[in-house]
Length: 240
Image (tube, rainbow, N blue to C red; front, side, top):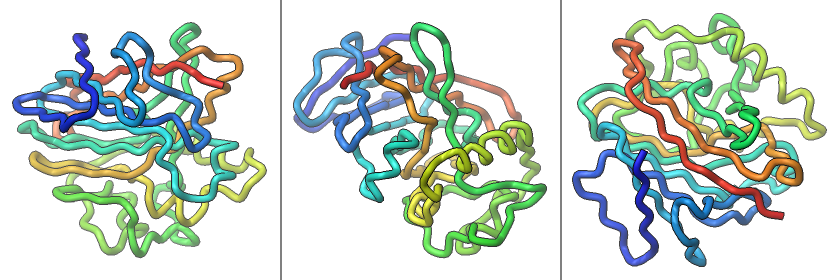
């Protein structure tokens, strides 16, 4: 993978196929881009990578909800733009933070449980707080996002992953996820060619006192064929 870094001054991405921008490690998230992606600017960092027409921007330090959430999870603000000619499947199990030294994975936590279909109680997001266009939620989330279109083609999911990681919320001292967390979370779904989505993903808390760094990884999947066509992997280092 070839990575090029650009800093401040109106980044223009023309004919680039993937963009990952990383900004600020404030807000309780002790992660910043590794030196291998270039020197840090004071307020903005951007990393450009080429992955078949998919543009992605990820920021730390953007969480504007209850600050106590940061004690238990690592929120990352993500924008995905699909300039490819294929629909992109977005699923929590296709995202992770991976420890650079040990390979330990910190999973993306689904904020809404699935049990064959979405449980309606306390899980309806009447006014989504994320931004999207050309995006349809996964069929099993249709009842949870009544104001949005649902993908109308077969869309399976890894029940083991979802059952395991939705239960992780119960391990936290706070009552998580909060309604605000659900509202601004990116849900499973499909981004059509020309579409985009922007919102938050919540990862298991990275113990930055014991782990020197992680890679943000995103596997790109064609929603129609189920085939993998690329991966974004960008290094972060831990700060205290």
